[in-house]
Image (cartoon, rainbow, N blue to C red; front, side, top):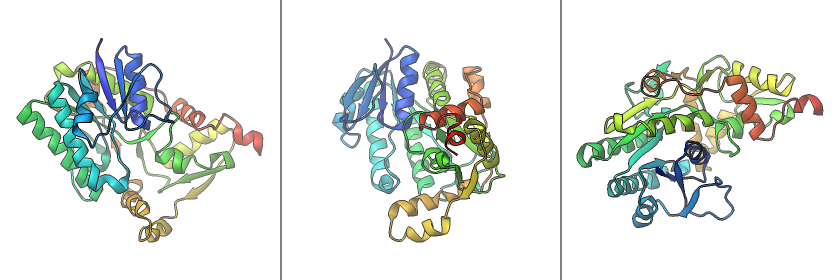
Length: 319
């Protein structure tokens, strides 16, 4: 049976990737630093390992054909942890001969992100986190060239969907929907790239199953759903059965608080993404995988809200 080791399986993306691989018939080894109290995917083999400890990580990846890299430290830990983790993952992939699959994001494009970005769009390290992401992907490219370790990158927009929390959708936008409030971090008329996680998980599996046809270092972008704030608000209203009051993000307060709270500072750095219209092209991905299952945006939003405990018509009933 094909084996995939999912790093960061206790996280939002890692959990969805593990589920997608399981449904596709893969043997899944779900790696977490500490399994106690975590809602992990049923049917996966649970392995505890620390990505900052190379030997531990290499042991967890032994026998895998694919390593899915869902590791994502807190923003405040990126400077100290991202590159050491990336080097350890490369060492594990080299030792096992596994293909490394990495979920990229739009940070690499920097503040110069165009209205439609694709795999070959120029990358600019105009933010601290964007520069770290570029450095990490350069490491992957160098390891592919020098050591023959294959890395496949699938870049996506903001995540939503699933029953775990940790994205803009659930921590901000949908946080007060049960009280009749839709909170949006930017102008309501600009398109923004979103990735519905169950769909994204299937795309990762499709690339993994076609890895032998791909280059040693290959990049793709995931179209997902492109929606303006107004369009997303309308879909949320459709689910709950009534209008929502629009509220903005208090960016001035968050920016000022960044002097005291490091996480606020890190969040503020990425605020530009809400004032830059952008979408991702799925053309190259489709040329390799063919047509993939794509959940229509209205159903995806309804599913995402249900995963957060917001049922259809909830606000209408409680009003």
